Image (tube, rainbow, N blue to C red):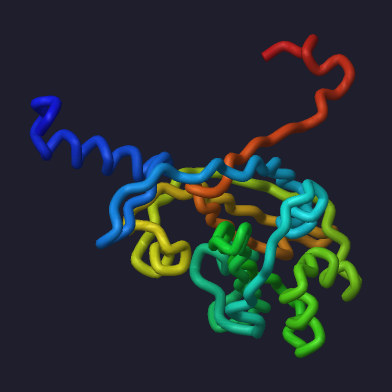
Length: 210
């Protein structure tokens, strides 16, 4: 090569850049610099669609599942759902700039929310939390965990990214006055989103001992 560098380290460097979202590799077309990411502030206590709308980020929603079903083990355990008990499952893909950006998988205990009208509302960006509120549920708090995950075959196809590409995974558990009510897992396309968080510092908090 012109600079005297063999192909192996060049390919390795491009693979690393692709994994962190700085370049995009398209089979048969080449390697391209990624577009500027959308800055998105993660408000862990509110709904994803409300967050996007409040921050002025245009998006569209595709509803993939909207029905009662058997929850997977991690969701059932978090919600305290007995073996064989059904829960409401809402699965959505949110697109930003016509690109797949956020994959949302939500499970709600003791909630009937799969009507045709409600499904249409979800397709128009309606918040699941707002629908739950309309049914009389009053959420009091949300616990959130954030980890880095890597796209499996299904996620790679959904997000149109490479297998094993890094994603930000946000798992939340919302509680009402009775107990855990809604479990959700969100996968963010790291090639599109730059995530930020903020919280209010209460008076006197800095003076507390660690």
